[in-house]
Image (tube, rainbow, N blue to C red; front, top):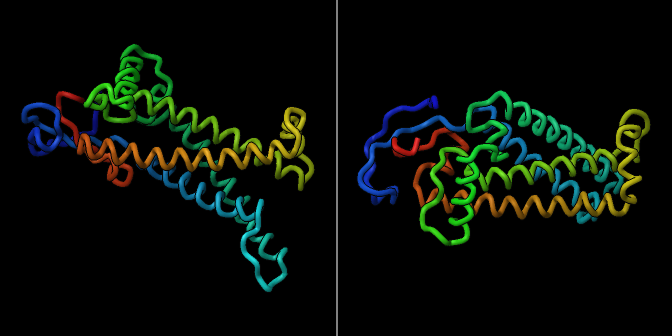
Length: 237
């Protein structure tokens, strides 16, 4: 395994809770594209949620022509949606071209090692063990969760494009018209709205997990999504 790592000062057991005093290194885990895509998706989710909620239930009354504000909300929502789609496509591409912590096998546990790591992750989340699984990137259980989230994102994109096709004709309508043969329009709207709330539920859990692991391991989980670097004992690389 190759890593982009630099030596760090030896860290005592009281800092990491991982046994006797260990030599640690800082490792470049999250590449710049991964970090840019991560924050692009997050910002898009914020913008899409605010504008989408307004489109469904207008919560601002203005003295201007109401259609003017609604038009802006729809325009911003559609723009953010296409940026979101581009970010998802970029992340899928990077799952086949990025480093070892960004690749697709971090989300699908195809190896025995990753499956064992997933069991360790479950035991940790279930309070059956005090130590989190030893990984530099995502543990296998977290990876599987992100796979589900990406499936939700794809469903959100499909339902969103289908709803947009109701206002347009041509290519988009021909590509997404099948959606309404599976679900009626009200149910497509409901699913699109439901996924928004499920996404925010994941955001809350994601932040909690990041804080939990950062507190337990003190390896820079929170700062790594800004800098890309994490700190780990040598024997865990």
